[in-house]
Each structure stands twice: as C-alpha cells, then as structure tokens.
Image 1 (spheres, rainbow, N blue to C red):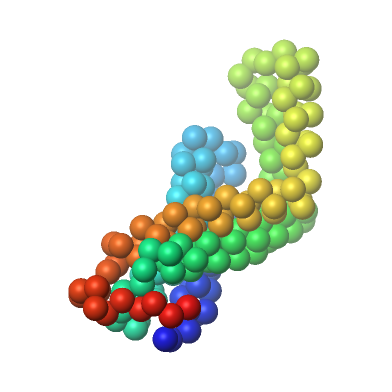
Image 2: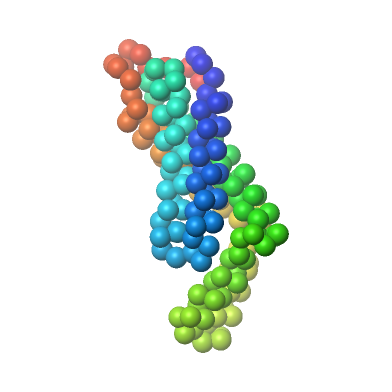
Length: 165
C-alpha cells in the first residue's frame, strides 16, 4: 500500500492556502467569508483523497478516506491558525476583536450590548483556544469530506479496494 503522507500534506496545504487567501480577501468578515471559511476544511479531505486515489489509481474505503481527511484537516487548521495569529500579531491581518467592534458599532448596538458581546469574544480569542477549536472543526469536517471523497473518487470495482492502513 503506497504512503498516504504526501496526499495528506497536499490536502493540508490546500487548507492553509485557501484559509489564508480568504482571510486576506475578506478581512472585514461577513457572511461570504463565513461560508467560504466553512468550505476550507471540507476541501482538505476531498483533495487528500482525490490526490491519493488518482495518483495510485485505487479506491479507498470510506473509513480510510475519513482518516486521511481528518489528518489533512487537523494539520491544515493548526498551521493556518498559527500563521493567521502571527499575521494578526504583526498587523498584516486586522485584529478580529477590533473588526467585530467596528461592525457592531455600525449596526447601532448600545455600549452595554457591545461590551457584553466583545467580552464573550475576548474569552475565546486566546490563540490556544482558537487553535483547539480550529483543530476540532478541521478534523471533523476533514473526516466527513474524506469519507465523501472515498465514495466520489472510487476507481473501478470493489475488487480494487485498498484496505491496508
């Protein structure tokens, strides 16, 4: 059974590049950025499974696809999160708390509502918590998309199924 490492790394790189690109293009956030942001971890699992099955011309079971997607999503989320945190720290990307403050002020929230909402956001803005949440989301969505990718990118009949890990 060929190694899955390269395919998992390619899935993670897709996550990192797409995630950072969305951060740069939609710095103010918004619904479009949120929707596209949800697709990023989903793409990592699909790309990992697609690359593996296409490169080696074989089919993987859904469980193996889920494992590959989970690893690609986890690695992508952790690296992209760390890079985004560094870019925020040096001022290349805007501080999400300040961006949220500006957006909420524009919506006419009272000072009390604003303080309450920002206090909640600040509790979850710790980089370690952000990486942990991103890792969980990346792993779950990567696993789901990897399992879907195993079915979508199936090669030939079930007799070609690759079952070794």
